[in-house]
Structures are given as structure tokens and as C-alpha cells.
Length: 144
Image (cartoon, rainbow, N blue to C red; front, side, top):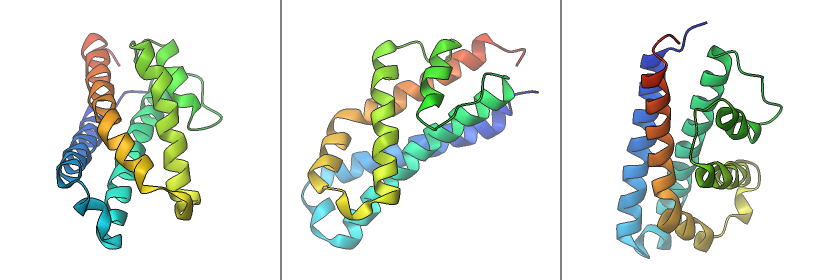
């Protein structure tokens, strides 16, 4: 199997697009959360960015013949074990993002705006680091 680099590039670009929108929401401050429609848009944007990470993980795992994950949470450790994700602090933080995505999707009524604000204020660089590590891995593994 071969990694579809154009597909991965589109996913990474989508993650970056969602992160840029989240930076805009951060700049809006309270205004991003005061209106329910806008607040739900912020939640969906964050969910989309996280789902982009998960989609990249699943594609790389499948196309590189890495062991299949039992759950989305396992994708991060699998990529770390195979040298895709090399920043151990990032590897420790990303599962919390995936758990948060599960909360937004399955128990959306329990999402607290303060938690979303915290994620936006502290975790957006993790998306950028994830994207850069995937690109470095692909650059270093042209045969995939």
C-alpha cells in the first residue's frame, strides 16, 4: 500500500484551516461564546480539527501497514511507536483532544464553554506540531 500524499495534504490543510478559524474565535473572546449559534460553530470547528487529526492517523496506519487500532485513542500511540510522532509531550496531550471530540459528538450537552476556551488558549499549537511531524515523517519516508 502507498500513502496517498495528496489526501494527507488535503487533511493537513483542513486542520490548518480549522485552527486558523479557532484563532479568530480566540481573538473574539467572549463574543465567540455569547451567542449559541456562534458558540456551536466554535465547537464544531474544534471537533473538525480533531477529526482531521484522527483521519490522518487512520490513513497512515492503514497505508503503512501499522497494527490497526482498537480505538481512535490508540492511533496516537501507534504513530508514536512507528516514528511518525516524535514529540513525547504531544503524544501525551493528543489523546485528551480525542476524548474531548468524543464528548462534543456524543454528549454535546455536557460541553462547557470554559473548557473549549481553555483548549483554544492552550492547545492550538498541538495541531500545528502534529501537522509538521506528519510532514517530516513523509519527507523522510519517500518510499511510502
